[in-house]
Amino acid sequence: MTDLTLYTFAMSHYSEKIRWVLDAEGLPYREVILTPAFHMLPARRMGGRGQTTLPILQAGGEHIQDSTRILEWLAANRAPLKTLPADAAARAEAMAVEERFDAIGKDVARFLYWTGFDHPGQIKDLWTRHATPLQRAVIQLGYPLIKLGFQRKLRINARDVARAQQRIEAELDWLDARLATGHRWLAGDAFSVADITAAALLAPIARPSQHPVYGEESFAATLPPVARTWQARPALQWVRQLYAEQRGAVRFKT
Ligand SMILES: N[C@@H](CCC(=O)N[C@@H](CS)C(=O)NCC(=O)O)C(=O)O
Image 1 (cartoon, rainbow, N blue to C red):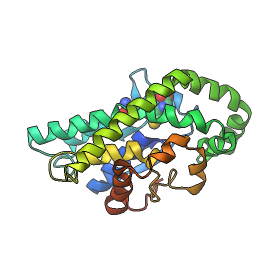
Image 2: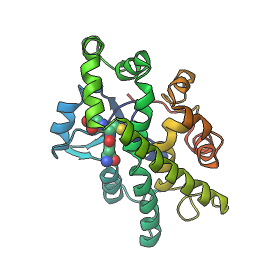
Image 3: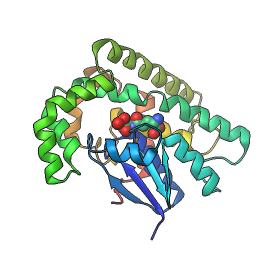
Image 4: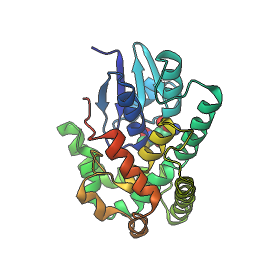
């Protein structure tokens, strides 16, 4: 039995970040995987902040929306955490790296959907894997409309996608430079939420084989061509190595 329930999307990189933290901490939880579009009402209701984003952590009667707020809640309510340094300066360093990779999460989604939408079968599959038969039928039928809503909300257009690419490349440069100085970890000298956040947020591009969605071979075909040229970069090799060494095969706890 556990009092923690994590509401996610299977393919959400922010959700994967929290899944990974809970797994790394050995905190038992149950996962509820929601279906896009059908998540909006429950997420808005649970979050109570006028927002529809996942992940949301339910702890007893409390709902915490937003991955950073979830980390803060865990630090306050489930301390000590192995992945969040207790020392204030070390924690600030880890959270600064967490913040920089969180900041490109929407860019990563924008960048990948831009070419992903050329493969409607794949996207529909991604959106309906955990759907009920009725939800699946609605998504199949309403796909053009849902896609349009997505494109508007996430600003998936040529100009914003070009900017997203630049911002992702800047963080890959930062990560390459950090690794070039001989650092194995992104904050201090131990594995922390800094590493988890960078790897989870970049996983859709790095495609570690342990990832339950992005590790699939079929997903490679939907990647923007430029992302294929990034695969040999130290930053993306580091993401795959971290998954292999620290994460292992991801199993949903549904
Ligand atoms: N700042 C939020 C961002 C979460 C986020 O953007 N989640 C996306 C999925 S990766 C989402 O829920 N999108 C659907 C929506 O906004 O309704 C966090 O750290 O949790």
